Amino acid sequence: MEHEREALRYAVRGLLAGYPTRAAIGAPAGYDTELWARLCKEIGVAGLAVPERYGGAGATLLETHVVLEELGRTLTPAPMLGCAVLAVEALLGAGDADACARLLPGICAGERIAAVAWDAAEVTGDAEGRLTGAAHHVLDVEAADTLLVAARDHGGAALYEVDAASPGVGRRAAKSLDLTRRLGTVRLDGAPGRRLGAAALPRLRDVACVALSAEQVGAASQALAATVEYAKARVQFGRPIGSFQALQHRLAEAHVRVEAARSASLAAVGALVAGAPDAADRAAVAKVYCSETLQAVAGEMVQVHGGIAITWEHDAHLYLRRAYGSAQLFGAPAGHVARLASSVLAG
Image (spheres, rainbow, N blue to C red):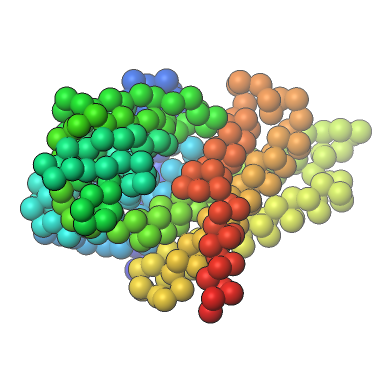
């Protein structure tokens, strides 16, 4: 299987090479729709973790992890995290076979974009399935055809399917520090919804954190590689700055950080796939450590590049923005440290 994953990695990397990240930043949908269509149809990235009976490849989150790392490496805007990971996981977790049969084939083909609004504490559902409330920090909200909304109703936290064009549905883009990732707010005012089943929010949170950690590892790896190349080429005092011992030590420390983050992320996704009892703890570790690693390495990238790093023309500021934006996505690191401490102390 490792050989197949490496083949997948290089197939994705090769396709991404022809689509500059900056060209997609201002796109109406928030991503390059042509690239997403090719990723889905030629490589099948959106259906990797989807069972074959619903049009997917029947693989696991391990394969999805590979794609996310490559997308993170290039900071490519794409609905992979929000749609192909969170929406797919939410649908499969709800256990509604009819909804899966209706929605998942379109997601796998790249023809349907689903966004997950999982602020269940902020949305309520009545006996007729009408939803009221607001959800924030929703990925792919502008491009979504379908909303999967977690809401509190008579049965607790439930997942509802909502047509994004339905009356009573309002969507608004939010200003984001990370220019390569679109977030938004969904406001519901008696919007009609179809109840799909219980919302498995703890599992969804863990999958989200681990998937995000894969992106962070990819971004940190590329930020480090670009910084090392610059240190080899930049000459100061008649020598490449990479020859200075102090800088060598800093880059060596960054390398160790990246490799440790990769190990934490892989351990977490492996635990999720295996259904290990400590999967939630490993997800928290990955979220915290990979967030901190990307912040540290992106900061080092800016420091080593100097003034050029804060110009629009250079990509260093995009990696720094991704670092601080992604650290807060799905909960700040401090919150995950707290739940990890609670779990460890309880054990």
